[in-house]
Image 1 (tube, rainbow, N blue to C red):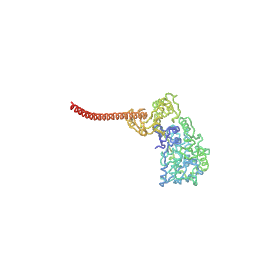
Image 2 (image 1 turned 30 degrees about the vertical axis):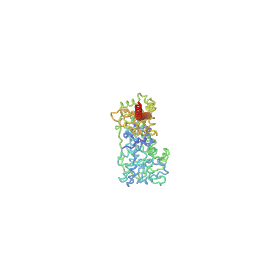
Image 3 (image 1 turned 90 degrees about the horizontal axis):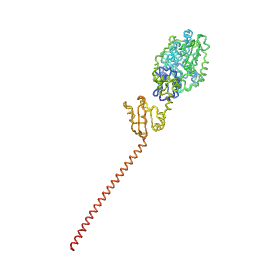
Image 4 (image 1 turned 30 degrees about the horizontal axis):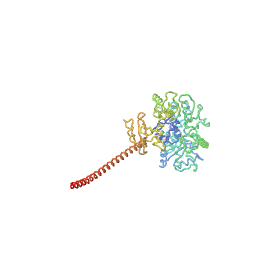
Length: 576
């Protein structure tokens, strides 16, 4: 099950998501965009960076709403970071708002955080490991399991506060309750699926914000109400990071460790690298993937306050709590056992395919990277180095042509100049005859409105059988005259295969004017011949008419002269 989906139609190819992804878990080619689920640590950084809405997260909101409408007893486990995520004049108004949505019980995940803290203290007190790493952040756990197997044995084997609270809730209420975690974290969605009988669904603060809008609930207009169970100051402070190591708790912590808080992907990877190599010891570290910890989670409400305003709101909320650990559990004792909270993390490195050196070298050569100096490592493609880019290409996760340096060289080449300045309309098509690129002449002839044609089927612009013929296996190229009535133009069309039969190039030469001139000349010739024939026919008729008249006249003259001759002869003979 994928928790992030990629809509290629909305992607503007800015590569921001790939640049921020710590594990490069995005397959980014010309024809495909997708999350590589086995490499994804569900940190949500890509989702935060996408400004076009191309990346969407898996939603549980409809399922939760259905459970509420069905009358099921739905219980909310609310992450304490809500106090900063929503700009409330009183944080306890959120409890009232959630119950208006239909939640029967509303508790803070801070209770689960306190349960986890107690388990941490047991492990820390023993102090049997070179370093100790907290397991609160699912993205950090995924990072270690997939990429830092040598550090796994130093992760405290305890579930996260969300999972602990889910177990806790189901131990105190009937088994048929439906538990929903609400927080800013994307990775919680993946984590909830991994554990049975804990949390049934996860919705983010952004999903919750939309739900309130749909129900026309204005939180600040409501009266405040308490959570159904209390929680500690330490538990509430978890989203701020470092709450385990507060000075007032030092008496309960092993003094042989140096207690630190590490947040942000770069800091976490650097720390884990040192742990894996055995370079450091004696550290007990709370790791969080998100910079500034959970208060800066990836799916905050759209109208969330700015970061430091969130920090201020949450600090004020934490400071308002005076309950200690013992106060909380005297009210609501823990029923679940340490065995249920125990979780052993395992290496998942083996599921990641390794790169083939020969294949990577071949890709580098095809990219024009013949020497180390040719590898600019500009990072524009989303990868830190050209070698990393080549590795991704060799695995089919990237496209060899998506390289700024290569594109720059191409743009400056003579071929590109010809492509851009040619009066002929030129288009480059993929194997399915969808447009990859067109030149300015193509836009002028076929796309006067200048809309984006990338991935359009060429048949939408050029409807002619030549496009059906070129995809036949035995056809490498076709050249013929075509007429497109839709734009009233005639072309000499040449379509050929390129790039190992995976692409096509179409070159369309506009011969409309010459065709019109040719047709006009043919028309003149036909009209001239017609006129000549008419003249000839007329002359023949005139000649025939003249001949007929001459024949009649001659006959009449002959008759008259014969009469005259007879008369003359008759008179003369008598005289003689």
